[in-house]
Structure formats: C-alpha cells, structure tokens
Image 1 (tube, helix red, strand yellow):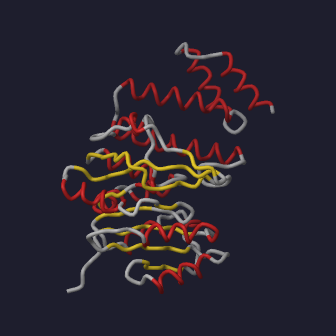
Image 2 (image 1 turned 180 degrees about the horizontal axis):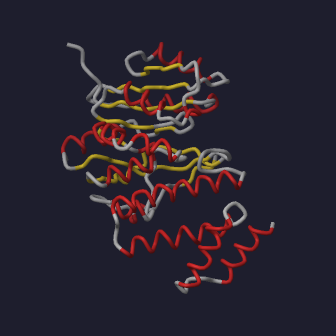
Length: 307
C-alpha cells in the first residue's frame, strides 16, 4: 500500500528565479520520520522559475510535486488559486513557504508534527524566523510577547504576528474555512489570505509557538505588504482592517479590544488622508473625542492631505 504524505507544503511561485533554489533546498533537507510532499505551483512565471522547478522535480520526485499553470490564477481573485493548492495537498497537515522565502532548520517539520500529533487540542504550530532585508539578516519577533493557547484576541489586535512560512496547520481547519461564506470572502477582495485564516482557526483551536528559529523571510522592496507606492500600502492597510472589522462583526469582542482596533485604525488612516479623506477626518474627530490626539497626528493628517 502506497504511503500517503503526512505533511503537504504549499509553495507559490511567480518570477522567483533568483531565490527559488534556496527555497526548494529548504524542503529537500528536511529530516523526518514521515513522508511529506511539496506542492510547487508556478503561476506562469516569465523568468526561469519553471525550469528550476522541473530540475528539482526530476531530482526529488518523491518530494517536489509541480503544478505549471497556463493562465495566471492569482490575478483572478476568485479563490481559484487556493482551491488548486488545497485540492492538490494530500497531507493531514499543511505548511507554507513562498518561493522567495526559505527554511533553515532541517528538523522544522519534525518538531511541528511531533507537537501536533501529541497535542490534539492544538491545530496550528508556528515558530520564530529571521528577516533577510537586502542581504542583512535580522532576528525575528521577541518570543516573550507571543502567546500560546487560544490567541484570537491577541491576533485581532496584532499583539504579535504569525510568519506564514513558519506555520504548520491541520488541513481540516483550512477546509472548514474554505467552506465558510466563500462567495462573501471572494467579493471582499482581501489583499491577503493568511491573516483571516489564522483568525478563523484561532476561534476553534489552540495555537503553539516554538521559539526555534526555523526559517528566513525575505523582505523585498516590492511585495503585497511592502511597496514604494504609498497607494498600494494604503490598500494593504485598509484590507488588514477590513478583515479585522469582519471578525469584529462576527464575534463581537469586548469593548477594550474594539477600542484598541479603532484607535490603531484611525491613527493609521491619518497617513492616508489623500486617498480617503472621509475616514481620515472621522478618525481625526474620533481621536479628539477620545482625548488621544497629539499635535504630531494632526500634522501627519495635513501633510498627507496637502503633499
């Protein structure tokens, strides 16, 4: 009887040629007592990414499982990409690493699966990681501020961040999320798919943080979350808070949590007054009413409105 993989790695690729070998090497160095697979999805790259994937698939056929698209799926924004990846994964657990990031710990998967197999009330394990910014490696988050257990409120107010490339999660959690109001979620056109998944998962299961540094996130000058284009940054910021407000509406958290989120949202909106004057001005009035306004905030509002 053919052994099925216990873990499936989702690896999304689009024009990642300069970084891809390091990413794929992070998969094949994994030392595990179980079978695992890497679903490597090339979304019609225009560089040499597909050739590199083919090379690794031929060399490591039991690990690297390629998907070569003929039509770009990400740009559709209709859920197609998630469906393709989730349907291709055979594992009980799902891990993630995009083509510009990379794993550095050969025991990453083994550590995470060992914990999940021994603690059935936990559904997600994540770890610490480093950040590679233009070749300079910086340490990850302060492990002391990252909580374990039921962490929904902490995630909602962004007390800490979960690095997607470090996550190992039960596939059943992803499947449940994909079935929940799929049309509504697609219509919202959120800029990211990981943050709402973590929030949904945190409503139903415990999270575990391992302080081990297992991976490196590559901070590029242009990405979904970082850009030199301020309007793109505004769209990403707004999308993050659209997700937060979606979960506030669903869960009705306590007044303190709502207050923290509103304060951070309206404070952030002052930097985007030229793109959304209405909400920026409402934010200014809110901060004045709550007696949380500072002269610096007013200057930020005016500067971004006029310049």
